[in-house]
Image 1 (cartoon, rainbow, N blue to C red):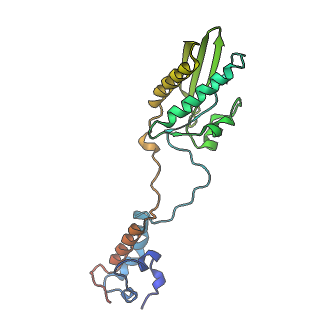
Image 2: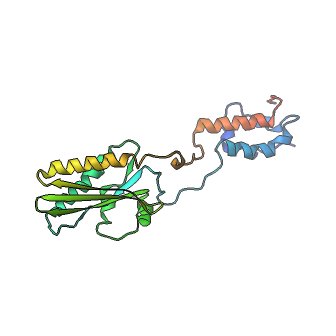
Image 3: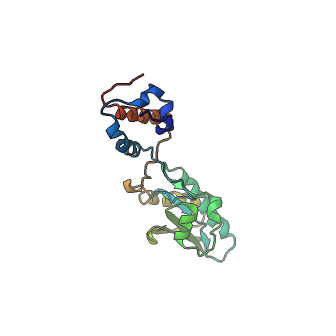
Length: 224
């Protein structure tokens, strides 16, 4: 009994070698067609995937840098703290394979007590870096803390005591030191790689259609 052309996947109609008359099949092909087609679609990645809704948390190589807090009581040190935050974001963005939340996105968490897990969900990152600046006389102490939002555990922390002389040089020095220390903690792991999505490549779809065609006629005939 002839089959309607609709029994073929849409990609098959545009594939090379397809002919409406070839739908009649041949001996030995009918028994496998129904069971093999779904398996072929799944194996080749053509099964439909559920669309993504909202930001997905990236792998381990993703981070948001929250504004460093000025704890010195000196309003002028707020500019110094903001400068360190901006330099860290800039330097981290240069690290290959590292996803960094923008400064604008991170600024909304200034001075708040938002849980790391919430920040992770809202910004789509795994790690949260925060810190503080304290000044006493001509000395300054900068503290930095890295939190793993998946476990809510502190993954790394460091304290830097420096003499406050050239502000720009000090900001650059601290930023470079923090970024260098973070590189080892932010390296992506194989288990964090995203799962492969279904193919949307036209050539691949046509190739799958041709394999479907061959499964219908394993003897190799093509009655045209």
